Length: 293
Image 1: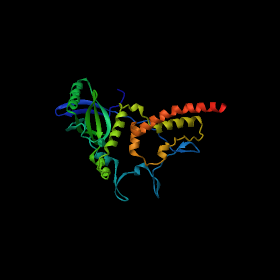
Image 2 (image 1 turned 60 degrees about the vertical axis):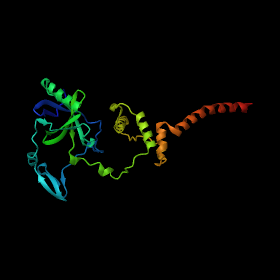
Image 3 (image 1 turned 90 degrees about the horizontal axis):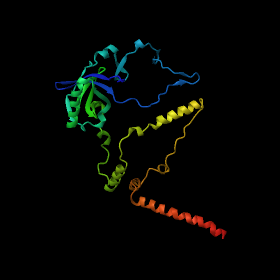
Image 4 (image 1 turned 135 degrees about the vertical axis):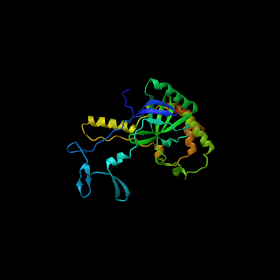
């Protein structure tokens, strides 16, 4: 395997240890990065380390500081910071198991593929995977990597296992702090039925390859045009907003739902319009004959 393992060690389940390797399950998207360029010379701009009233300073004079009050810092040297880092351990101890749906989506941060380290580990690996699937549980533990401890979950995924780094509780903002002021009454039943029918009609298998970052795609096209234009200024045309949206934000929610669902009076009026349009053509064709006569 060409990818470099993020972590190598053992997953421990009670007295059973399973040698594994963990690999990143995601990669950076097709983002475009820019550098600031000095236009007259075409050279990139660099940034110096400066202090107000002092000017440029040497790197060995720079410390890391933690602000304890406005303008007051506790200074730490790099070796002091290194001294408190957690020693990397080669064991991930599964200390707890929870229902698969018990972890709020807000806690999930980044996924990794977990693979058995060798042929001898495959049997125990398969037993753990199938046990998690059968019990519909997720294993929890703390992984020590690069001086920090990460809260992680372990769950089955197809033929393998996926480890997901979780956020700690103090890293997650509670939803109720934002949603508390929203009305608690239930939605109108008729509107709810229409919304459900729209969702049912548009339900399909998830195909992530069908979705693209249109901004990144547009930037690529702009860069290609700029290359061909040999530096001339190019401004991309932006489609105007649909006329319906320009008219204003006040809408008849029930009418909009009926139109989206293709049912109700709006759908009937569309059919009526379709019947009228064919009848209009013969009258237009007959008019010239009467004039010539």
